[in-house]
Length: 276
Image 1 (cartoon, rainbow, N blue to C red):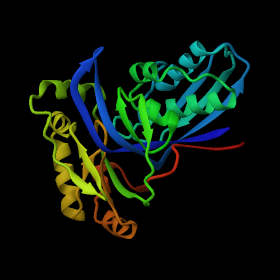
Image 2 (cartoon, rainbow, N blue to C red):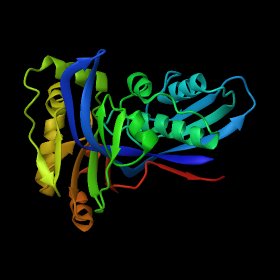
Image 3 (cartoon, helix red, strand yellow):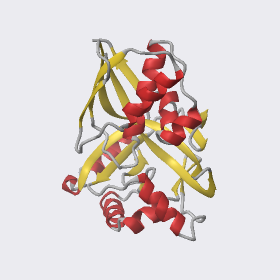
Image 4 (cartoon, helix red, strand yellow):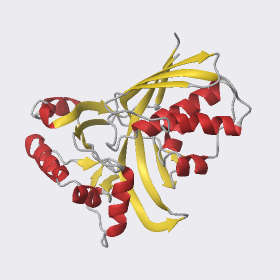
């Protein structure tokens, strides 16, 4: 079986200053987009899983997929082992949720196929990642709490996005640490798209840690005449617009400056699958 686990974009993100059990609460409007990791899953007769990543960096045995399998087995009497191969198309440490998507898609797929009980979402959000519950559900949604409270939202309009991921990377942990160090975290500039606030209050901590992000944002806005916003904890920048216009503006971008430049769109569900 091959499944395709999508990336996400935070159309808006507000991390709250309150900390409960050492974690920040947050609120966000998130959408799945048409950029996918490819995951092959095969049953094996073995006493342990085989998990392989085709990735830009090595991924160890404490990956989100390892954790997702561990929690599925803790919640269920489930002993089947798997050979899982992941071809990474979603850039890592880029605010696109690639690792969380892989974990959430594995949990959703195996829970459905083998009729397993899904692990507690709070535990998943706290232990694997705050974006993982979103990918288990897989729909455009408002997200709150630690990431475990989901309210699907119907965004009927086709939404096209131009995304650009710089070579610079930022870990979520570092960005949150810098967020805690900064006093002024309440005021966030925003724009409006069809009644939706487009904003991110992790932007200032992110470009404080990596000043080149501001250079990339200014460059993108100068060559496209579009406003770019950062997704998640960075470093991907995105803008929303008409598909034909974005195709035209994409040609103005020097792709050598970025790991990824892509035209993408909001999709209906973060998990696709095909039989083999």
